[in-house]
Length: 213
Image 1 (cartoon, rainbow, N blue to C red):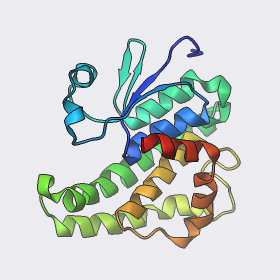
Image 2: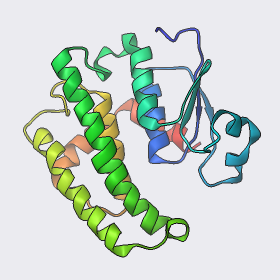
Image 3: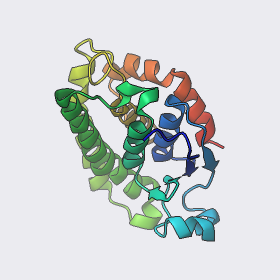
Image 4: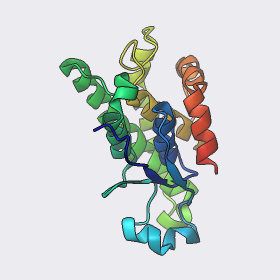
């Protein structure tokens, strides 16, 4: 798919997960519409938003008749649909593609869902999900332990997770590192150069502005 005849509509700003979608949009140079609604605000109850996403979560992507509501799925769909603009964002060779999806799965599950969102729910959002200091402590320790896997790759001298090529997996990892900063989880020093290089990309800077609309 070329995607040239459709103007995507991206719902959501203000979170790390919405940042991912905005970042991919800007890496690909996509002309898209942003509907700047934030989670846990009255805007989430807008009838037009509930019509496309009854679960009322962001980000949500409308692309013609297609609606996607998971940040990783949105990233992958945009990367595939607009692949001609940045072919390296999703590798094409079988082995590289397998390693790419391994990274995407690992970061989404072990770093984001299992670790950071446990901290988010039971610390920042404890009034909703309840205080669970032991779970938060264990989640912090688990996150840092799981970071050893990408750390080995980055500290081996490779500029990106898949070697010389910047991919969606790097976007996913950097947004998790940024989320960890916000959660007060100290980032290991070995990621400093990697983090600074990637957050210095023009597309990231543009995405940050869009995500704080």
